[in-house]
Length: 157
Image (cartoon, rainbow, N blue to C red; front, side, top):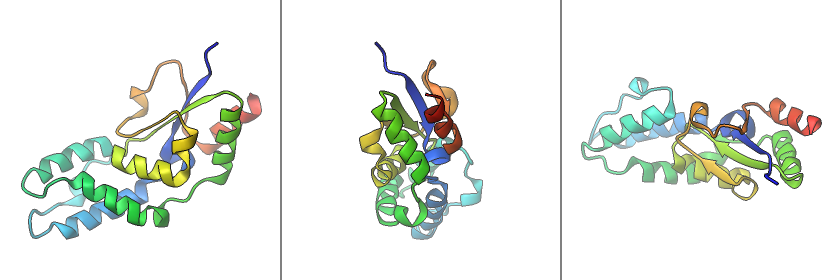
């Protein structure tokens, strides 16, 4: 028998990484200003697309911005990301009931990895994937975008 699978948006349900992402971009622009200007306002709102833009920007001599993202997230993420206790409780109950939870975000994988560890998702979810939009998710899985939707699944199950 296959376990029911749900795909849960990390930022909309468990803890929003967007404020940490924006703070990181400001940090990156200041840190590398002498090497290469970074106009943060010119970056795409979709973080998958913004990551591609940063890859092109970094090729000018800045180096691996993703390493900087990991370091920044490890040092600062707890200031920006607070776990949603209700969502975490619902997720634990669903997993205990046999549901397979996969978390996703459009944030780069480096940010998702640190956020997943910080929020306890690394132990709870079968996968925590970054650089993914809702349109790219596995067909057949229930898509959950808010804590209220996750709570409703728990009540209905």
